Image 1 (cartoon, rainbow, N blue to C red):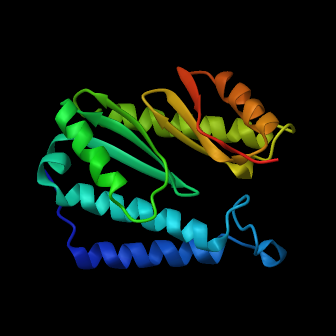
Image 2: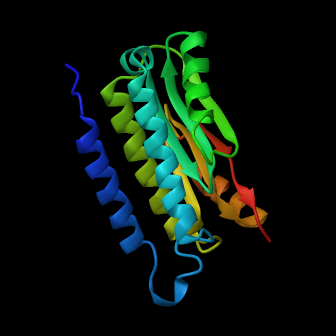
Image 3: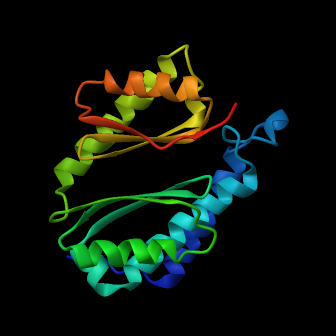
Length: 190
C-alpha cells in the first residue's frame, strides 16, 4: 500500500521542519555556528535541498515506486544512499538530485538491488544511534560536528572537522559492533 502525500501536506511538514530546526539549531552566543560550523542559512539550505530532492524523486513515478532512496545534505554536499533495481533507475535518481538548486558535490552510494526491507532499515537506524552514542562519549572529537548515516551496515560520516577529528570519528565508528564499513565524507577545516 502506498500513501500519497498531497503537496499541501508536504509543504506544511516542510515549513514545520524548517521552523523547528531554526528554533533549535542555535543557542545564544553560537549564532554564527549553530550546527558545528554551519550558519543558520546553510542548515536551512541543507534541509531545503533534502526536501526538494525527495519531492522530485517522489514525483518521478518509476523512481518512487521501484527504488528506496535516501538523501542527506551537509553543507550542500549531498549523500544519496539506497537501492535501485537497475542502473538506469540509479542514474535517473542521481540526475534528479544533481538537478536540485544549490547542490554542491553528490556522493552516489546507491546500490543496484531490490529496495531494502523495513527490518534492514530499522537495524541501520539502531546502528546509527549506537555510533552517535559512542561519538558523544569520545573525548577526542566534537561529536556535534559529525553527521552519521547508515545504509546496510555501512556508516557514512559527514561534517566540517579538522582531519584529526575526522580520523578519530572513523576509528570510534569502526569499533561499534555491527558496523560493516566506515566511509569518511568529511570536509576538512583547520
